[in-house]
Image (tube, rainbow, N blue to C red):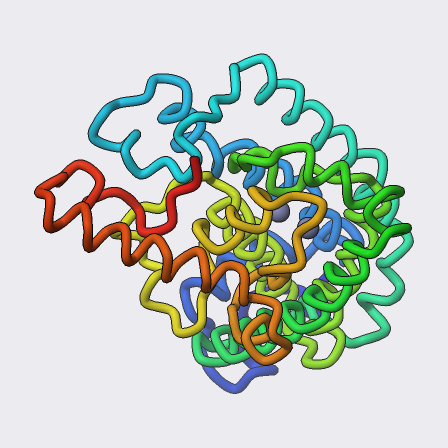
Length: 300
Ligand SMILES: [Zn+2]
Ligand SMILES: [Zn+2]
């Protein structure tokens, strides 16, 4: 809720005209309680989760040849019924676990200083804060994920997420409700350390989910824009983690690759990658173009 009665009042307080985005924000949020602005998060979460995995899910279903060759585990196909069941389970977890978490975490959000007012943050402020959020979340997620691969953590919690040995976008948040709640902690830590505007917070949550969906999509597309982000893991990287399964002690990181490199938990993956690079050379010499164009790490 904004402390101004009119746009004129807001402009007088800021000492300048409002930008078009700020006028829109004023009109949308001026009379809305901060709690409801925060509660938008769960709606965005379900919206992003329902739409972002759809394109690749359709590829999985109809298998157009030109795209299908990028599938990382070509022998594993999930029928529509499995995808639908996964979707239902995740939405239920969102409503029953993340929803109540939203209610109870509202005072914390206010306490750490996430603001809802004017001015809106600049593009640079948003970008810098998002970078911090991604780095903080990635680091703590790495250690929690490693703990979840211990005997107790895996058997009681994390094995649910690993039911998909060949992941799909819809399976990105498919996990035990406890895991969804535990991993909310590193996601919230960045905004708690460097609090920003609620719009940045929404954007962070949406981007983090889009990133997880891309990482779990099961395809390694050569033109993916995220390939240009330094130390970015991506689909091939996390697919290997699922492929190895419960015994996996490789590729724990959720976004970047540097933690696995520093702490030596990417050795199996690197060995596999080098081995396949050698095979690729052999395919090249033997003129087997189909394989040469396939993803570098292709699990069969
Ligand atoms: Zn895992
Ligand atoms: Zn995963």
